[in-house]
Image 1 (cartoon, rainbow, N blue to C red):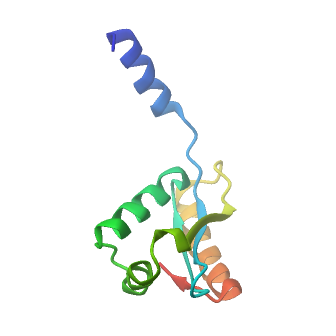
Image 2: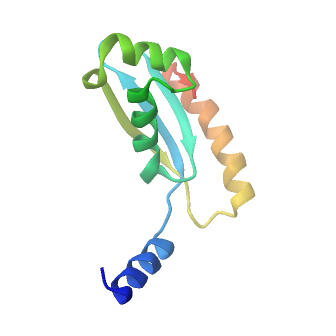
Length: 111
C-alpha cells in the first residue's frame, strides 16, 4: 500500500461516525435474550462472537448457551441507536437508563 493511500485510509477511519446504542443477542433454541450497550455498535458483534468462539466470554449464561446450542442459534440485533450529537457524559447516563428499560421490556439478562 502506498503511503498516500495508507494516510487516506487512516484519516477516513478516524473521521467515521461512531454510533452508540443498545443491542440484543437472541438464542433461537432456548428463547433466551441478553442485552447490552456499546459506544460503538459497529464493533460489538465482532467482539462478542470472537470471545464466545474462544470460550472466554465473561457472561457465563451467554457462554453456556453458546456452548450448548452453537453459533447458528444466535442472532445479533441493534434495538436502539443513541443520538450521536449528545454530549458524552449524557450519552453514558442515557445508555444505562435505556439498557435497564430494554432488559425489562425484553425480559433479558443485562451484559
